[in-house]
Image (cartoon, rainbow over the protein chains, first blue to last red):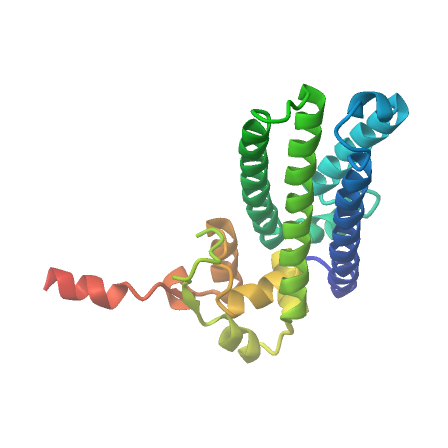
Length: 150
Length: 82
């Protein structure tokens, strides 16, 4: 049996996680507008290798957070409560939304490429950003909604 | 049973059974190993628990699963047979 203190702690951390994920998603998506704000000419040259690497590290980190639920330094019981089956169902729904975001952005890029060629790196960047941003926002929205209803 | 969110949720007597034992949602969550939000979502019909969790609930309340959960199909099926 899990103690009431653990349940309360998990509830508090769960609320914080939902807020943090929303902020992370907004910052991440906002960052992408800055990334591509240099116009369509010489985009790859304008974006430094450091910037590209930073984006990749950030994307991997956020992907890991979405998949694991974070809070890895917490105890096993609290972590279990933070990743109970309701949260896992929220994550599954977030993956579904992320899949559709990836599909729509990929198809959009395919169409845009006919008029304005897009490099492979740009295409991957946009598809991953859209899917990750939508996935994080959906997970955060579902988690916040389930907590506001109690 | 799985997650729903698309309607057709299973009705349940969880709230009544919990009240009979004077347990809070957090207390029941602790006994089941799930969060208070999960208990609330099940009680309000917003989430249908997995089969392992449904069995856990049945054992905890010492009742058969069909006494706790009702998918509303029992009456219809009886009518079909008759």
